[in-house]
Image (cartoon, rainbow, N blue to C red; front, side):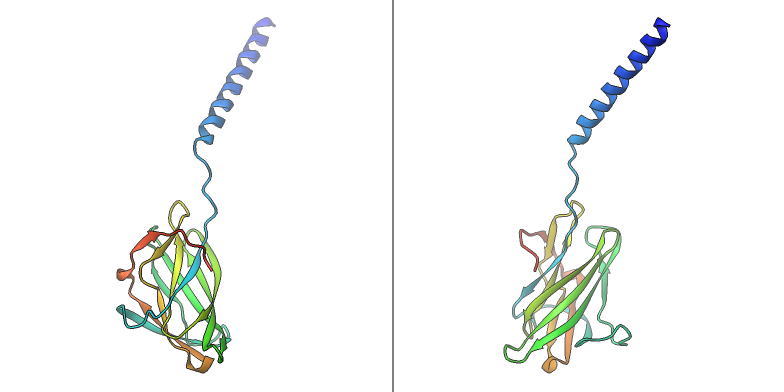
Length: 175
């Protein structure tokens, strides 16, 4: 009986020591922050970069609109492809600015829905992407440029070529 009691006591001590060691080991590796994404605007970005493709964003377009604005590119931080889909929301004829929603689908991470306003013709829009440590990175070149706002009925979007994008850690607040 005493042997069994001694074995149980040794087992409890071993399990307690193992759990304590595991807890201390896990405390050395804090959890990553939640991934984020966002958008930034760069004024007067037209005519500065090589362009790869063009898309047309219609105001308040329905999902069955045959003109797609999505653009898929290789994720610079993962072995996957990401997609951005801009939507033209509203146009202010007094300020000649537009508001956009952009769906940012980051493979193996999440899908984000970001908004940006006060976008003028010839402005560039950059997408902020999380790296593997979920720190926001920004490209030196905007992902797309609003070439024309067509009186608010249609926006002509010119996508820059991904080979121009150089990603760097940014201390910016996404809009």
